[in-house]
Image 1 (cartoon, rainbow, N blue to C red):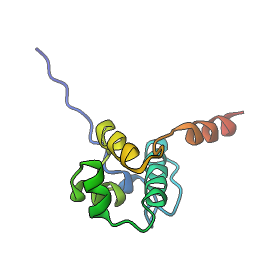
Image 2 (cartoon, one colour):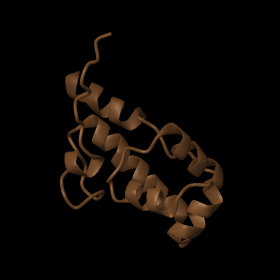
Image 3 (cartoon, one colour):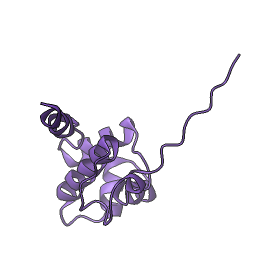
Image 4 (cartoon, rainbow, N blue to C red):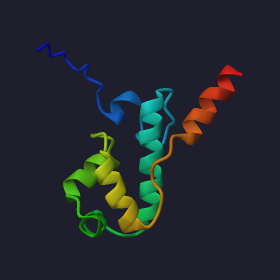
Amino acid sequence: MCLMAVPRRGHPADRAPEPWPEVASEDPLAEVARELVLRLRLAMGTRSVRTVAQAAGVSHVTLLRVLNGQVWPDLATITRLEIALDTDLHSSRAVRDARSSRTD
């Protein structure tokens, strides 16, 4: 059995300009993560991190790390947050549209 090393991809905030997440990234993966965080912040409104995390069934530390661009949120975390906040957080449509408009 041959094991291949997985290349390190860094954190979303590491692949985007500062300040995270205010400035758009040229990196399509970081841009999807950045847009997710912007949607998440908007959906949270005035609710605290702990309140949202508890409602979603995720650790408040995990939620803070997502908001700070320190982790790539997994599908389970995104889904739990979407259900708790009753909103769609993930979409790569805008990034795909932007990339295709640059190549046209």
